Amino acid sequence: MTGEAQVRLLGDGRRLHFNHGPIDIVALAEGDEAEVQAAYVQGDARFSSILEELVAELPRLRAPVEEVRPVLNGAVAQRMASAVWPHRGSFVTPMAAVAGAVADEVLAALVEGRDLKRVYVNNGGDIAFYLAPGQSFDAGIVDDADAPALDARVGLMYDMPVRGLATSGWRGRSHSLGIADAVTVLAECTAVADVAATMIANEVNVDQALIERAPASALSDDSDLGDLLVTVAVGELPAEAVEQALAAGLACANAMLDAGLLFSAYLSLQGRVKMAGADARLSAVGGAK
Image 1 (cartoon, rainbow, N blue to C red):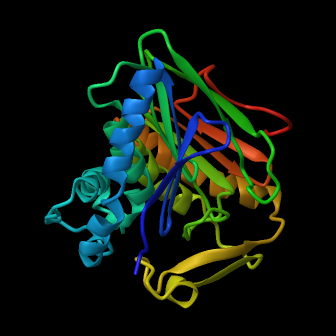
Image 2 (cartoon, rainbow, N blue to C red):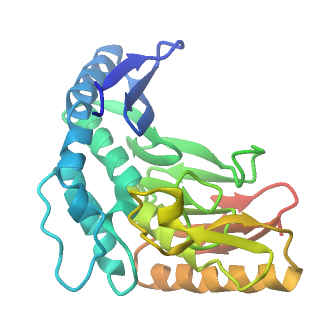
């Protein structure tokens, strides 16, 4: 049903491509060649069973989290449940953290027992990373994948309490209840960043006739969002509507910041930007306001 997991080196001979059904990951490990090769063998071994483990628990992973914590067996499923648990007061299912949790699990497999300098695991834009002391990564943020441009940049440093980056929005591969072009979150791990980005993006919203919505179930019959209305198109909004939507999302991001659920967040809608917990290492570029 899901086919075989495929893991291969890309043409540059440095990056590893993991693919299995809907999971599509590019990873890079840096360090001594023998350590890198050993890390890649470990990543390959772990990746092969991740999708089957998730499929085995899919009904529970698609169920809304309520006051009783979901009992899940697989390591990735448990990462998902832990990430969404703080948000149980709102509608959320463990699937809100699936891409980030998979990235975290593959990263953990790559680095276990290895002496590496830097590692990243990019699962469709949700990125888990490892840094040895003194190391850093620079990452770019793209608001619209259909018209890619560098809209913001972030410097990921060893001494930051951050090991995950995730982006959500109505233009992304998952459905959104909101209208954000992009919400990017930096957090302690990618699963936590993934669900935070999803929840903030849902809150970037406003009531406007220029926004087209449809039941999630009409777009994807297996969606964990059921009949909730998700965004399918957004017209050019009045400036005051953009500001209102961003303000709602920013309030959500600041609440998460105060609760220690994220390090910083970048919210973008139609060329306007808001940031929560931002410092000089997360900054908008170009003409964003």
